[in-house]
Image (cartoon, rainbow, N blue to C red):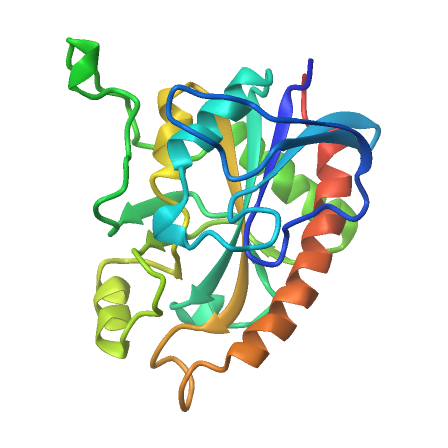
Length: 249
């Protein structure tokens, strides 16, 4: 039974260095996950991989079935989850495209997404603690692995989760900055909260692919984002190879 799952985001729809062993379609009470679960060997351990936007990157952030994805990973036996997220940089220390960030806090600006497993059908009000939204143990593993791989990674930061699929306006980014956010992405919530509800040890590797709106001259260039995604995801693959042997079973 696998204990470690990897959720791929934009730019990481497949793990090229994963030695594939099998694929499995997992059914959930919440519908279909984004794709079949892909099992394989990476860094000498079995892992399960799921591309949150689908195998061909066709599912936009607001339409992802986050509940099905997290439920399916738990069903496979995963207990720890490394999520990969593409983000824009807001704070000065987070503007360099291609840099890696291991966030420790998150602010949810999304709406209309199925965001909990504890709806009224449970006949009981259920709360979970979300003071520290990311698993500190797994964050430390990722930072240790970055050091061993010779990769610079910012060890803290607040992730702003926005609705998408459009990018934010410059005024919206200023608001996020006033709120204390360092990076902005579209997939961090409700994924992080759902993982906490199912008691999964969950951490994120955020890849800065562009300065957020208003943080650089001119409009956001999608070609630049694609280039930075490619470079950043190459670092993520290296990071994962060094991190997986360090993850406790």
